[in-house]
Amino acid sequence: METGSPKDTGITRDARTGAEPVWTALPPGLLRMRRLLLVVWLGLLTAGLGGLLGWLAGPGWSAFAALPLALMAWGWVMLGRNWRSWRYAERADDLLISRGVLWREETVVPYGRMQLVEVTSGPVERHFGLASVQLHTAAAATDAAIPGLDPAEAERLRDRLTELGEARSAGL
Image 1 (spheres, rainbow, N blue to C red):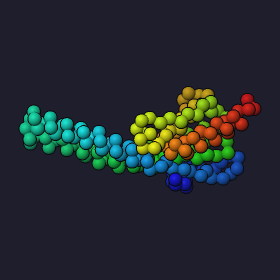
Image 2: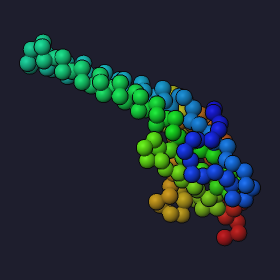
Image 3: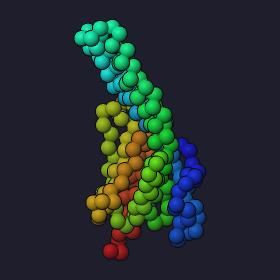
Image 4: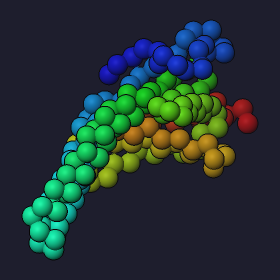
């Protein structure tokens, strides 16, 4: 996994220790999964549209089926940009999640406010060896998720966040 600091983040230092957070990028398996789904669905759409237009309007009209291919090329690039924008960092008192290309979102989840940490993995994610961590807090609007993690990392993160959440909420 990559570590480092995102270029345009507004969060720079840990309030308690004064250290910069160590950012962790998402593994490349998430990007491979999303790109494969893009190619499969838009490939099927292109083939179906080409066949339908060729059958109903003639072979010349089936060239319009190439439009989903242009969408596929654009989506390929956008998926890469979106995947590179996802980062998370574990600090002394909270978890930071940073994402977004045009509209940057940075979520700070204090360990003491976490009520539930879930690891989920649907059938497609399991096929690619991925899992997601879902964080539930006291405020429903601040629930956060980290998608596309290696299952071992997701379980490690769940266990660590649960342990830190229990330690921080003991004084409440």
